[in-house]
Length: 115
Image 1 (cartoon, rainbow, N blue to C red):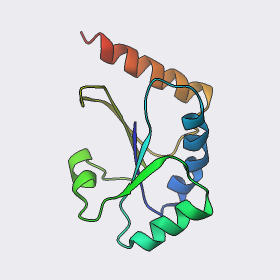
Image 2 (cartoon, one colour):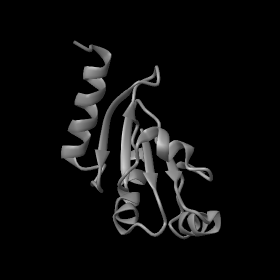
Image 3 (tube, rainbow, N blue to C red):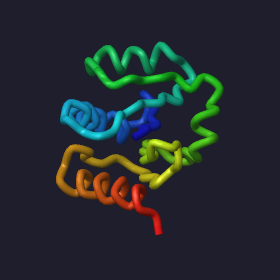
Image 4 (cartoon, helix red, strand yellow):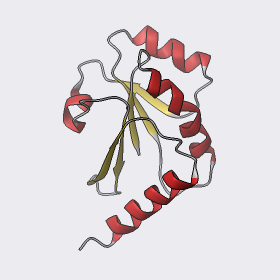
């Protein structure tokens, strides 16, 4: 699961705590954050202030943003073990909520058995 965000993005900041709680659960996937901030110190400051434990990277040249098609933030991309994009979800969610957990499980289950 890749979450594309920026420190200036209000909805991105709103969903960060739920991504952290999701990461603490014993799940079958990893969560990686990708910041599109122009200034790495802004992103690093937000991560420090929120005590983030998820692995985060700064997309200095916006390569990941462009590759993933992050036209709106936040963007969360569900990717299978082979690197195949299964689903893109634009907008903030409560990622540890029942609806999101169901979406994640259904998406990965379908990814295992594509039609």
